[in-house]
Length: 90
Image 1 (cartoon, rainbow, N blue to C red):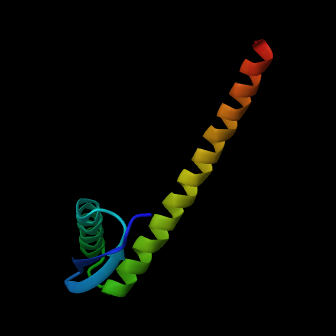
Image 2: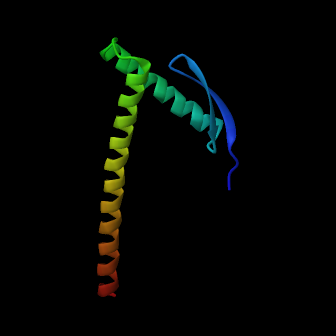
Image 3: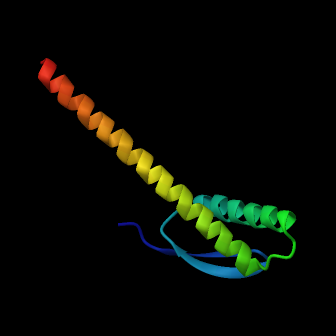
């Protein structure tokens, strides 16, 4: 089991300490993407608060996660059906 590490991050101009099991390189990539998306939302609608932008990002991230989980399930189902047909052919 991987140990949690404290990771300091600047997100939207504010410093956070995050407990993470992932590598610093992974966390750097995540934080960079978060800041890029916050900046994009600010450009699209400068009147949005940081909190509103964060909520919109969370909704988008969870929507993407649900779509990907559904796709994984569909692929696993297809592979399961495929492996069953391979057993029958043998």
